[in-house]
Length: 365
Image (cartoon, rainbow, N blue to C red; front, side, top):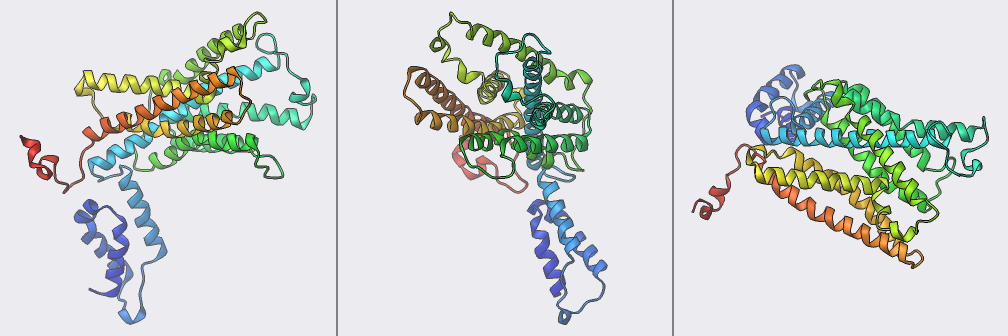
């Protein structure tokens, strides 16, 4: 074996073992033919373009590309579900943000009593930036609709723009002031970052691009409009002068973005586990794995709020909200291992992996 061939084989170790067992010799021959006649004395090495192509192929195979084992296909489906579910939630929330913006400027019902200095002077750059920042949420709608209609490139561009504008509103302009508001924004940004990363990784050139009907693409919009109506009704009742704020302290942690995400994930997790326990034929590893992955950033966001409330003024309202958030954390942390266990039971093994009965002979008894 020549030095160059040995180095090509070393580069190919980035590929999964099952893929190398089928195609390593073919790929090595192709690389050697392209390299020409080189002597070991010349210290030949694979070209950087060849290394990059192998690395990209390894990523696509591990994310369910052409020729990938079933276990990698399941992994790819899980990542794509993370992107679809995450973008769907953000698309629904962006409709809520748009409704709040329209109401803030008196275009949807009576505007709330807020200090006009917060909005900025009419025609000022501050007011213009505030409008652009709030309207940027619609990019999540564009991303989800594009993804549902099979246009992954448009979805990626829209999601990256939305994420960039989000960080532009969280990080102070001109200087990095690491205060509590910036810390909270960075922690909560994990909820946005995770679906975008899943979108970039899961929808590669070898991934399927299903074209779903328009009613599926419009589901988050309808859910967001309904959610805005429900939240507006609740806030109008809770802000009434005759209502004691402490009576609603148990509900406040559920009405923010982390609370709504927690409620959605808990509902989906219970429905997923219940359905698969009652109907074993519907057991697929992708959905419970995707829900378990989406739980992680929500746990960090809620935990950050709990830690912040611990150092605040000790009053009954704060303690009630803290207790509700702790309940949310416990519920999510209980759902996560259940979903992982449910997914692991039906996840196919890699080629060459011994079945459980071969590892443990008692499994057959």
